Length: 200
Image 1 (cartoon, rainbow, N blue to C red):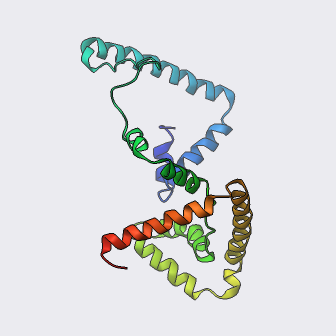
Image 2: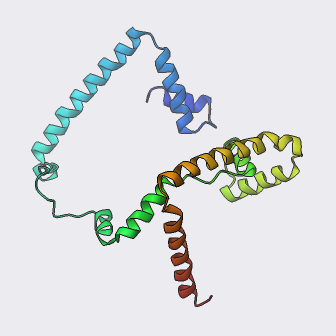
Image 3: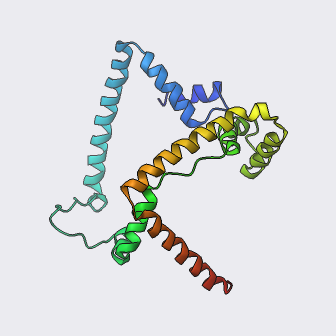
């Protein structure tokens, strides 16, 4: 990949790294078995060389050697932040988090589908344009589009609304108490906001 990357980047300067990687992947798939074997052997040699050099380094600097992991039976003295937070969460807070994670995502509007499709192309065309300026350009383009041009995005939105309704019905049947729990959590959130802002 390293040998092809600069050439492809030079040939296609506007491509993102992910697109370059995709092109390299396609080239790899198309390579004959003999050429792939050549690269695999090169990889094996480089890996062996790296391991030898790494061993030499650790022999010279033993304090830099990573400590072996403790057996799963013993407890580590370090506790991750996530684990510490999880211990302080109430059962209700855990339940709310679980439900929110499983809750189907709201469908994107027709405009957001348009933005999603056009943003990358616009960014390639104007690479120095800041993200908020790209959004403004997209908004102007959307405003200038006639109804016919918007139809495919409107259809995408409508399809997503139907899928969302189906997913939500399944979610509600699997979690009958979910809407009540989530509504309480939203109410608590808005009360907390009122207290913080000295309003309401």
